[in-house]
Length: 126
Image (cartoon, one colour):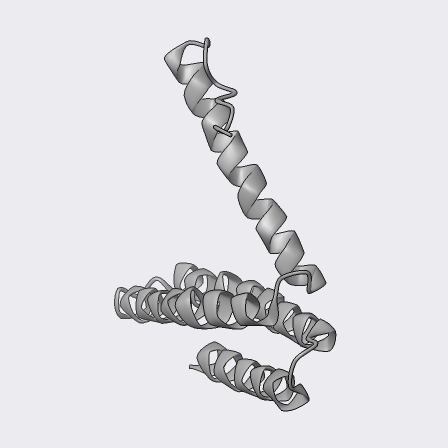
């Protein structure tokens, strides 16, 4: 079944706004599922901690350093902490809750919890 194009028949600017809204809606649904622990543990850990979380935190740390070197302290604080810390909290809570629902080997859930807390704490503090 082909997905419906809800923006079909609208002018280009309206279609772009509708498409952007649909992408935003999908992203928010995924973040809600992560936060509530409704994602499978593997997806929560490997996608949202490793594939997305580590590069995101490295990018915000680099931006922090560049802004500090440019003597832009408030923007550096924003980039270094106000962007990364909320993401890290969502990732840790999401993996923790997904691990609670995990039906596989209990030590896998425990390892995912420990690794997530360790990685996100390290990335938050650096």
